[in-house]
Amino acid sequence: MQCKHHLERKAEFRCFSCKAPLCKECAEEVRPGRHLCFQCAMIESVSKVGTTIQERREKEEDRKKKKKWGPFQYFVIISSVLILVMWGFIIFGAPKAPPRTATTDFAKEGRVLLFMVDGAIKRYAHYEGNKYPEQLRDLVPKYLLLSGNELLQLNKLSYQKDITVGYRLSFASPKPGEMSIVLTSKGVEYTLPSKEGA
Image (cartoon, rainbow, N blue to C red):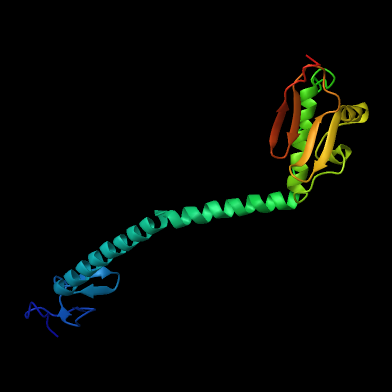
């Protein structure tokens, strides 16, 4: 059998693709034991280049798709975080009453006690289904941190449940000539001192 391109030469190989007989000069070894003619080698190299370009484009598109974050992805992440926080709050319950510093002296700072107890009543209502305590001692220790003789300080306050405003909290005996403060669930009510006390 003679070479396809050199009829005077004996063919030593066959093109792996088109099966044409080839001499040593015409055969191109693309892989060990695999020979191609010039035309088939060109076609294979062009198709390989085309394939690699297409593969690169596909990889680039996949990479862009993975990187792309839209509003939906942000919405899912934020919603998940909020749901986790909400479940954590439900599972672990109401927060503890805020700690009180040792420097607070209720005897000197009466209004501090008044507003501290008011905050505890509001926390009680929030976590107990909009109900108010029957008495101020019901706030201790879950909503109001008082211990020992500090509980006696609650006697300085007047507390009553009220149908219209929820509750009324004030000093049991305000100082003469001092403006009276009444705290309710609706806010603060101030009463000017009477003329006798002035």
